[in-house]
Figure (cartoon, rainbow, N blue to C red):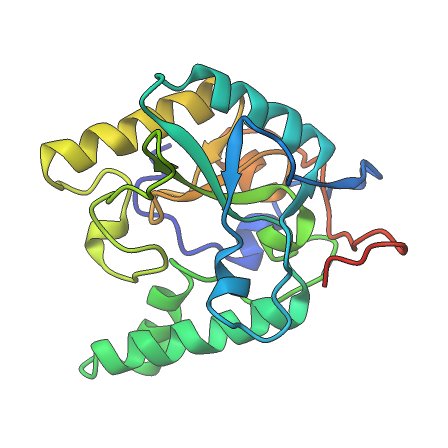
Length: 229
């Protein structure tokens, strides 16, 4: 089955996957010299966004493999991981407004469909949780050796055709996307086709794109003693 144009994730898709129930903890990704942390929503001033990035322990271990696989002139940059439901709801509303504003000719259901190619509906449902609420989703990009974020051919969270990972962008941007894609796939991640920056491991989206019958991770929360918010 080709997943190239099936990036509008739906509850119906999730219901074909056995729900994840792993109690694997969330861990902070800061203080690791293998990568750069750039908590983008906090830096953008998004209300409720975390000051640090958290992912499942298994995701953390695989990110280490991704960083090790990159050529020396690239550095891995982590933009976002687990996020609160309230932040997901805000991001979805903002994306919906942007899509509607940029596409005034679309009907409401078409706006919904296009929005869901770039933002998931906020949900803590065990069967169809928002991917980032599982701790199994991570947003990534590349930097040069000095830490300067590199142009990947479209801006992060930009809801247009150039954001699709396989979009016909200029050769330099295509090479950078391919570099990131190959390193993440080798570490066990899957990519959301509509977003060159979005990668999954262990959640139902990963299960869907890797033809697995069951997810590992369901919705989760930060540790009680966390001071990340």
